[in-house]
Amino acid sequence: MNTEATDLTVIEEQHVSHLEFNVMPGRSVREDLLVREYRVGHRYAEAHFDRSYSSAMAKSPSHLIFLSVQVHSQKLLYMALCREFDLPYDPDGPELFKMWPTKLDVRIPTLIADEEGLVQQLWIRDLKRVRDGVYKAFVETRVGSMQIIGEVPTFLMAAANVGNAAA
Image (cartoon, rainbow, N blue to C red; front, side, top):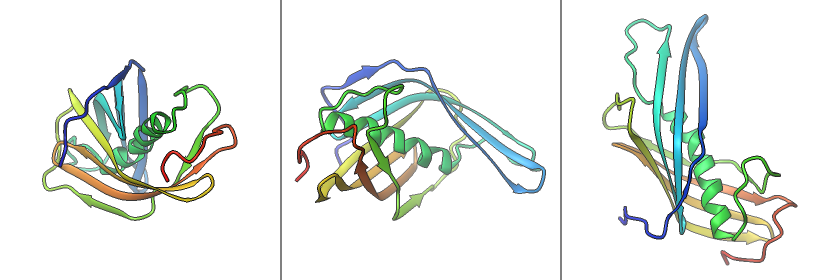
């Protein structure tokens, strides 16, 4: 597996990816990914971040929640697709893609307790054109020992006027 990406564009964007849920009534779990910067290359994106965790659940140690990684992988895929289709990445501009992960394989051999200096990497392993404006991305994302592999139907929005880059 190629874990090294070259020709990376650094995007310094202070971003917070927030996730909050409850397993039991009135006992919320919250995690924030505090992103310092992104790096984007050919069919690749990574985020450098710290995280904060809080839980009202008993004996729930701070650990990276796989749902936070899954949600954030959509932003990484969005950034990698902007590069793939030669579109400007503008977090405040019109949305260019819609993505819905469908098939997911999540592996977490050990809990990740680190709270500082984490890196999430995402690779587009394949990108297949289904029809005009519709693609299926096959992606892999990792943070430490955590790995998520998935299929992501991806739709170009009207604002994304592109050719067939991934035929």
